[in-house]
Amino acid sequence: MNEAIALERGYRRLVAWYPRSFRQDNEEEILTVLMATAREGQQRPRIGESWDLLRGALRMRMNLSRTPRTILAAVRLMYAGAIAELAVLVIFALTASSIRADVIARNPHVTAATLSYISAHIFLDWISIPVAIVFWVWMAWANGKGYDWARLVSVACFALNTMSLIVSLSQDAAAYAPALVIASAVTWGIGLAAVTLLFCKPSWRYYEQQVAQR
Amino acid sequence: MILTALADGSQHGYGIINEVAEISGNRVRLRAGTLYTALDRLRADGLIDVDREEVVDNRLRRYYRLTPEGGRRLAAEAARLQANAHAAMKRLSPAHGVI
Image (tube, rainbow over all chains, first blue to last red; front, side):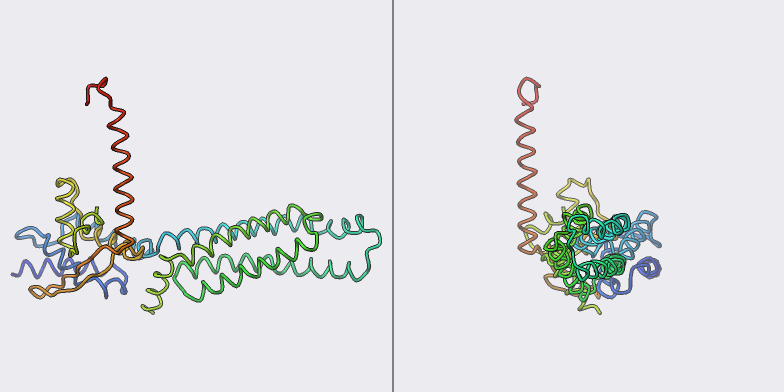
């Protein structure tokens, strides 16, 4: 009898490494299985069992188990989106100075109002592109944590990105800054894939579980 | 293997370990840590769900069952493996002395 008590205490010490939310839901059940699979007269957890439980706890702590593949893929895509947006920033930094000159060269009769508008647009891009990089990383983190609001913010960001791309294309940006438009289209494609994954069936279930736990 | 273990009815954790051992001819013996990491993942993916809970000898037993999605996934995987096995057997012609 004392052997069983000592063994259970040993198992509990190992299970204590799991996240609290997981333990609340599963601790007693895991102990049932551990005690059922223990050998006759066993007094403490075996090395293999200890390693298995610690490895499981680590996976849970890193949230590798509960997060569905769709969310993991969406998060990876968002980090890729941040890198793509950084490429947009680099291309923009290299081409921004020539955009204005290019517009004048192609349209000798361009008005001062149009040039002011282009300057304002370039100024806004200097602000919006770094902000977009921050948002990509922030959304990757928040969606990975299962915050339901992050999904909605991600959709809003994607909608803004879509509008920005449509406006750029309608203003003939492809003629003046083709590399920039291509890079922006790539980030838009990444955004579309990420948002689609966030609204897949397994993702819905995951967010619902996370909301219920909080 | 866990999905296969649940294919013909709900099972609790210890039952799943035994079923998996039986299915694999005792080649696979799941440990508790591995089992519950896998169960957590399968639940998150919507392939299994909790069927019911019982208390036996003051110990909690939670029974898991396949969801319709889990059943479809298992059927698709079984069909894929069957097709692979069929292709392998077909290629192992009598010339190889196998069939």
